Image (cartoon, rainbow over all chains, first blue to last red; front, side, top):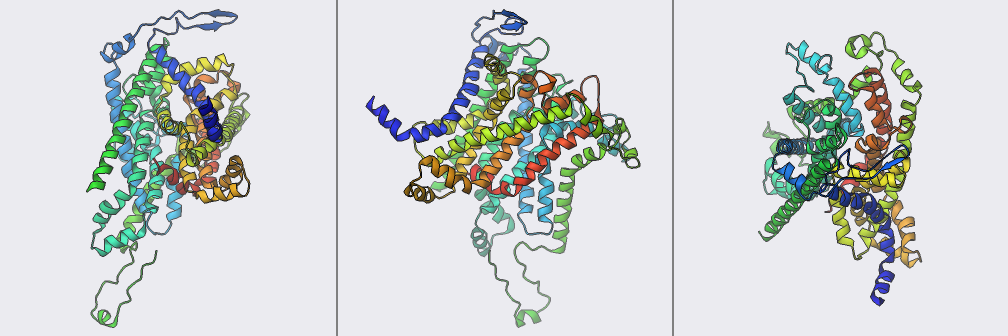
Length: 312
Length: 299
C-alpha cells in the first residue's frame, strides 16, 4: 500500500497528463477490439445480433462457435481470402515502393538550390492538401470510361480508351496510380526534412575523399536518411495496407472481389448484403495479426542491421 | 554552408579552356533544363486533376460530358445549386467544420499533454504506451467499427457530434502524441528546469513555456488532425444516420451513386471542400518539414 502511495505521489503528474489519452483509447479502441475479437469467435450476423426496432428490443441470439470462422476463412472455404490477401500485398508493396522512390527523387531535387523551388514545392504538395475522398471522386470523373478526360486525351492521340474503373486489370492500375498520386507528397516532405538534417560537412568530407555523386548518395544520403526512412516506410506500409477511402470510393460500389483489399472487403462483409459481423471481425483480426507480425519482423530486421553496422 | 570558390589564377586562366569550377549545387545548362523539365512535369501531374475539377465546376449540370463548351460559356450555376440545397451541402459543410474543429481542439490538447509526459517524465507504463501508439495505427476499421457502433449507441452517441469527435480522436491522437513526443524532445530540458526554479508547477511549465515553443509541432499535429476528421469516410458513413448530420464525405457520396451522377454538383462541392482544406494546409505548410521530421525521426 505504502509503495502504491509513494508511486502515486511521484508519478501522478505524468499519469494525469496521459490519462485522457489512455481513457479515450481504452474505451474506444481496446474495448471495441476485445469485443471485435469476441465477435470473430461467434456466428453474429444481421439476424442473430441484438437490435432495437421501434419500441421493441430483440436480444442477441448468436452463439460462441470457437475458431470456426478462422478455419472457414483460412481453409479457403470462404473462397476469397487468399485472392484478396495476394492483391493486398501486391497493392501495398507497389504503392509503398512507388511512394518512396518518387518521394525520394522529388525530395532530392527540391533539396537543390534552383529557381522556382518554392513554387514547385507548393504545387507538389497540393495532392496532400486535398482530402482523399474529394480526390477519389475527382479521379472517378477523370477516369470515366465514356467521357473522362484521360480517355479523351488517349483518343485524340489516336489510342483507344480503356475502361479504367470497370475492367478488373485496369481497375488495379487505376487504384495504384491514384494512391501514388495521393501519397507521394507525404513521403516527399518527410524525406526532404530528413535530407535537410544531414550535416553538410559529411558531403564535403566525402567530396574531399573523391567520392562520386553516386557514392555520396549511397554512402552519405541513404545512411543519413535511415532513421526517417525506417519510420515512414513502416507507417506507410501500415497505412497503405489499411487504405480505405481510395478503393472504397473509386471502385468499391460496383466491384466484385477483384480489386478489394482486405479492409474494404471486410467492410463490405459487415455492411453490404446480409450483414456478416462475425466474418468481418474475423477478417479484421487477421489483418491486425498480419500487420503486427510485419511490424515486429521489420523492427527486428532494422535492429539487426543497426547492430551489424555498428560492429563493422 | 560555406564553400570557397577557387578563383581562377592567372596560370589556369591562360591555360584555357578550363572549365570554371562549379559550386556544388550549380548545374550545367543541360542539367538545369532537365531539372526544370522533370519538376514541371511532376508539378503538372500533381495539380492537373485539381485544376480540371475546378474548370469543370464552372460548367452547367451536364457539362462534364462536353468539357470543351465550358470555356465559351462559364457559369456558376453548380455553386448556386449546391449552396441552395436544404439539408444538403451547407448543412454538411457546417457539420464537417464542427467535427473537424472539435476533433482538432480535443485531439491536440490530449495528444500534447500525453506527448509531453512521454518526453519529459519516466513513469511506469511509459514503454507500453509508446508501443500501443504504434499498434493502434494498425487497427483496421473493419474490426473496430461494429463494436464501436454498439458502444456508441449504448452511450447514446450515435448520430451525434460528440460520438464522431471521440472516434476521430482515436485515429489521430496516437500518431500526434508520438510525433509531439519527438518534437518536445528537441526542446531543451533546461527550459523546464528554469520554469520549475521560478516556481511553476509541471502543468504550468508545460502550458506557459513548452507549448509556446512547440508551435510548429503543434501546428503540424493540428493540421493532421483537422484533415483526418475532414476527410474521414468509413466511420462517418455508418455513424451519421440522418441527412442533417451527414458530413461532406458522406454527403458527396449521395451525388454520385449507383443510379445518378450529378457531376456538376460534385465538382462545385469538391472545389469548396478543397478550398477549406487547402487554406488550413497552407497556413501550416511552412512548419511541415521541421515539425514532421522532429517527430518522425524518433522511433
